Every structure is written in structure tokens, then in C-alpha cells.
Length: 170
Ligand SMILES: [Fe+2]
Ligand SMILES: [Fe+2]
Image 1: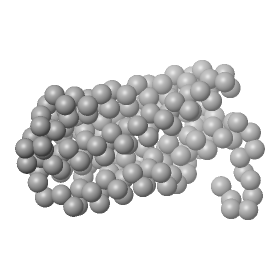
Image 2 (image 1 turned 60 degrees about the vertical axis):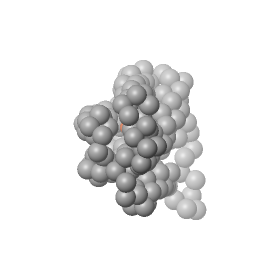
Image 3 (image 1 turned 45 degrees about the vertical axis):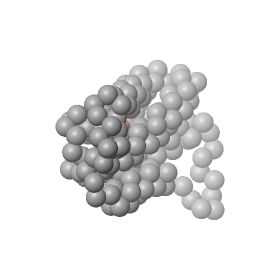
Image 4 (image 1 turned 30 degrees about the vertical axis):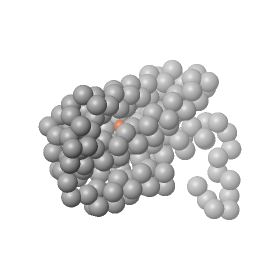
């Protein structure tokens, strides 16, 4: 997007921009997750994150299908929002020594990521629906459902698999 030109003219342009934005975000998430997996101690947490990393790679492929349905080459648009969430996650993790407290922080950071993704996919699905892009709606809904499931899994890990209790005892 140019600084002095207004490149987004139609809702389809806005949809393409939104897809470029989430495409960039998913790639940054795929890059950031291995470090979170490495740092996590709780086994349910690390296996959940590993599973979501695999899903994230498939989500990126689905977004490439979305680009092709829109007649576009896959291209990312820098998303300062996801960069900020990941930066904050890394700097918080860097401040924590205790493994149990670190697990609780990782859950919180990952939930911030999931909520970000849920918000973006929700909007993109609504726009694609309005434009009658049924196949795109289907692809994006698959990604959205995985983000919801990942967030629910993180809740379970925090509340029922002992992450928060253990962290509170540290
Ligand atoms: Fe994702
Ligand atoms: Fe996700």
C-alpha cells in the first residue's frame, strides 16, 4: 500500500488486503511457535502448540487457495498488530525464570494470538460472504474453526491441566 496513493478502492481490494494481512500474520505465527514450544514445560501445552503449528502450516496453504480464487499471487502485507503481539510475548518470556510461571505466560500470549486471528477471520468471512465468495468463506471458516479450537485447548491447559495452579504455587 502506498503512502501517498489510496490503493484500496473497493470492498474486493479491502478483502485482498485483509487476506494479505492474515497471510503475513500466519507466517509470523509459524515462525514464533517453535520457540514457544521449546520454552513450554507442561506436556499438554507443548503438544497442543505443536499440533497448532502443523495446523498453521495448513492454514497458510488454505490462504494460498484463497489468493488463487481471487486471481491474486500470494503476498503478505506487514501487520504491525501481530508483530506487536509476538514482540510482547517474547519480551515477557525473556523476563521469566520460573518454568511454571513461564507456562502461564505462554498460554496468555498464545491466547492473545488466537483472539487476534479469530477477530480477523470473522471479519474476512463476513466480507467474503457479502461478495458471494462461497468457496473462500469455506476455506476461511476452516481456519477460524481451528483458531477457536486452539483457544479452547489453551483454556483447558490453563484451567484444568494444572498450568495456572502450578504457576500460582511458584
Ligand atoms: Fe492461524
Ligand atoms: Fe492460531
